Length: 423
Image (spheres, rainbow, N blue to C red):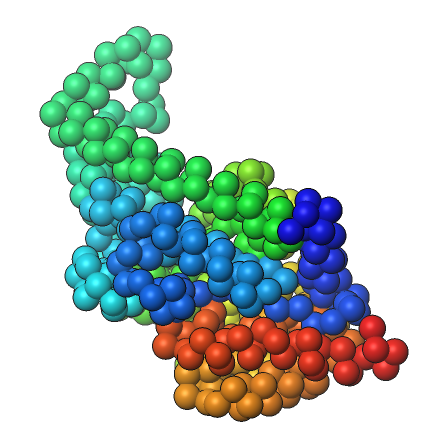
């Protein structure tokens, strides 16, 4: 493809996405692509090779994108090509192909307690100190030894001079060497990622997410307290939990802005784990979960970012709450199993929707059934735009390749039929 043709295609796809987000009517309904280990199926390689061989993984990703022709794509570098870095870190919160599970098995998240209930005050008083001395050594073996680092807050004048003694401890020296090795590996991955973004942009394909963020409640539930601890906190330590959630908001925003500053995309992917209807009452969602997350979303929007929460499982009861008093045309709400037709009725004048062809149809349906499901979503939830067609939660690992192709071709058949003037 010539440079001019690539730029023209890139501009066309970018405008289609921007119009959809802004709730303007696009020329047709756009598509987005995200997958983890389905790409291994497509490329005929193992899950482990996809994670560890950057060149092979990028070759498969490039071929997939050119084949499916989505209007935006999410980087596999951030959620799939991370095996070497995780191994060098000794990362403990996840099992991955060849490391805890078989070489062709998916990820296995490990739900554990990494912060004790009595440590909320310590975290709130000094999050960075808590990270260095306690949290990081608990979640990755490379950081074991950081407990010996100086207590930085309070160092002053000549106490700064004498305080550096901690860096000479054997544990700190070992940890620094291990973390540097992991950092060098991740820098290699980052360089691959930036080059890949450039090549795909030249070919006409916009990036569909700059980075990944998280709701404050999920931040603590998933990665600090664990399911059991967090459910206890919801009843026994609600005020302290809410104080901690507010504390973390500016730190999450800083991370989002730092990455978005170096890539050509302002969309931030936010997988939502604890908001579903069955996980907490409507009152708990409204008074505990939503306030801090709403603050984060509004702060992201004010900073020029485009939040894209993926509302996992069923969030039908939450629709009115998550649309109330939110700015129009500034976000993407991606729904996994929520009724997207009802979501369009409730949220259609507030936010662009994404989704949500079910895994059962993608995995077990025939191509014509996939096509029919896509047409239904397009016509019922895409009228006048405000929809990005995708699977419920990225392409399922087991989906037949022809079914996936059918989804991405469907918008070229049905993506304009509901526009009266054919545009």
